[in-house]
Length: 218
Image (cartoon, rainbow, N blue to C red; front, side):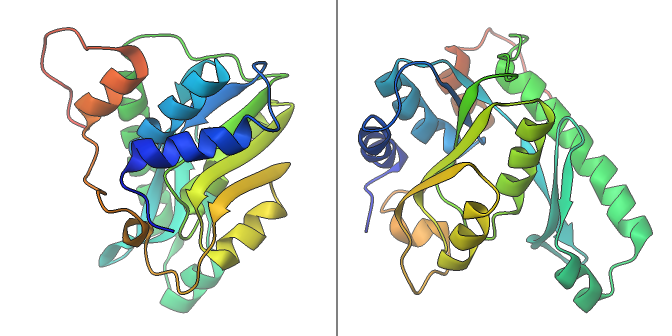
């Protein structure tokens, strides 16, 4: 499976979801890469689109390797095996949780442009990203939605790592993944165009053209 870009992946994902879900859903995307996918899904289902920001907690000396993730609302998941294997101390985890939680809060506020969050309680939520590798941010987002009393949470992605997909199926009410190929090294290997989505682009996708002014440090 090779997608041209996130928009095409979103349209294909939307076509699959339309076979099972009607209009009475809420689509929540994980910024930033999940927003172009989520917009296509929300438009196809004629559903509202919102965001949930989850930031990874990186390992000491290797911030790209996630040993956990935390949301803007403070819901956190940890990779206990990796933490033990790397000998990561509790003070590091506490400091990074606070730092990344604050960064998630700032990003969420900027992307929403002061628009209130959609109500989650009692609703069926389709949680969308452009793909799932380790699944740490997805797991944190799922925990956050459970904490907000979502009635059902369906994870929907164009591509997912096989091991992570199996783990997520045990946590979510349902998981829709268009592809789960092996070998799986990174999400970007399945996109011809996997260019980074900026915060400004993400906000435009979510709420329209932002008002003039300088973005806050994110």
